[in-house]
Length: 469
Image (cartoon, rainbow, N blue to C red; front, side):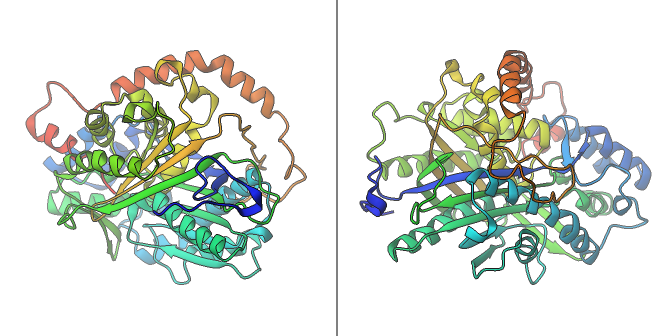
């Protein structure tokens, strides 16, 4: 990036070159949780007990994930047919239940940004669990009531890195608008419905006797954010300022990580090299990103000086980056917390991590009790790609939550545009409860690392590959 002094609306912020801010975030997980025993239930119902199936079931107990969010229970009809669902059947569920989640997540982001759908100028979306035309973003816009002309971009083929790739794309669109002196309010949406791919993956485990561990990691989620270029007035105070980013590909790794289309959904492609490759690329990417930000405070130099929002692709991704960057689990507390409680929701997860990091109970777990103003966002995707960005957190920001009716797609209510009732009480309760929660989460952070003693070599080898796209 080439910094350029921003003078729009007379502003002159410290970094000055971008004037881009995230003014709202919204995350919507579906209402059901899949616990580790759910996989055992499906295996017993539909498959013989083979060596590969036994290994996958064993790995399922050592991922460090307590529960994974899903659009249905273990008894969902589509997970219990006499065959795996077709890509057509999966698409129908995605466009029904998935789009409803995305609409709700987007409404939450718009509510916090204090704007209406009519204010949106651009929409950038991503998914790796659907490939319909028109894309799912078309139906989300319809659900939101966006009727004005907007510039839409739907990103595909970028998997778990999709959330940050969408933010990067949104930033470039917003800067293009700034160059032309135009307002930009970019709605970013990431949506993944992974849970119903379980039968297709288990079919492959059974038929090919492969150790396929996507069934132990992936979950469902929609997440959204609003990015503003500050032009046009009426801008809510930022949750995060976006200061810069970096994107690169690791050469000759196309065969290491992927998510390929199949008549029965999508199939995970994974090699044992992924954890080391991912951990090794973080340090040079971080160094290059820091070099583009000369105005950082002098006490922000090393990786441990920052908080980290890392996409939790798997337990060894998290612990590998810790070792590579000499940081602690507490630096990535929101990543671990999201992984433990929701699993890996591919592209939608990183925005969820960003949202979780700014919540009060996470502040109580900061290293040494000191929350950082500056946050490094990082995610990996097929290719292998790495996306990294630098964020400046607004520590004085008050989170604005949208009260919903409990439906997947809530109607607009009078609570829009005002602080929701009970939020102050909820925040106070969270702070009061934080130390107790902190002790529990810290215990989980320590237990989620995949160094599992007294396991056979084949299981240890498989556990070393627990980072998928």
